[in-house]
Length: 126
Image 1 (cartoon, rainbow, N blue to C red):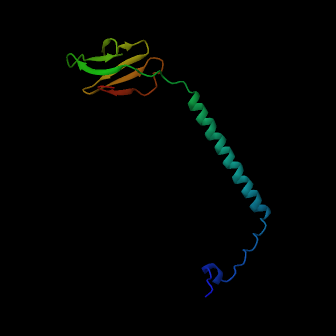
Image 2: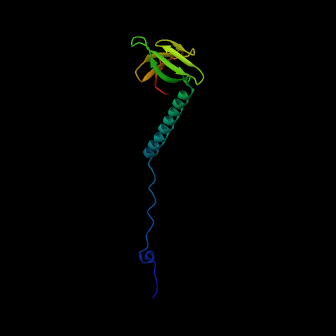
Image 3: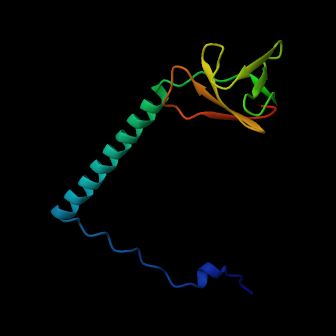
C-alpha cells in the first residue's frame, strides 16, 4: 500500500492574482496618512522630551513617623535615619519642603521652589 500525505490529495492551489495598481488619489491618500503619522510621532517625541527636561521638585527623602500635639497645632515627626525633626504646619523643612497639612495618618508636603506642583502625600512610615 502506498502511503500518501494528506497534502498530496488536495487539489493544487493557484496563486492569488497580483494586486491592482493604486490610483493617483489612493497614492496621495496613502502618502498623506504616512505624513500625518510621522508628524504625530514627532509631536509625541517632542512632548516626551519636554516632560523629561521639565524641572521637577527634589525628592522628599525623610520618613514620616507620625504626629503629636494639640488638635489645633499638630506637630509632624520626621527622621532622616540619624535625627528626628518636629515640624508644624506651614514650616519649611530642609529649605526645600513645606509641611502643608498634617492629618491623622498622613502628611502633605509642598515644594518651596514649585508652588504650583501638586502636594505629595506621605503615609505614616513612608
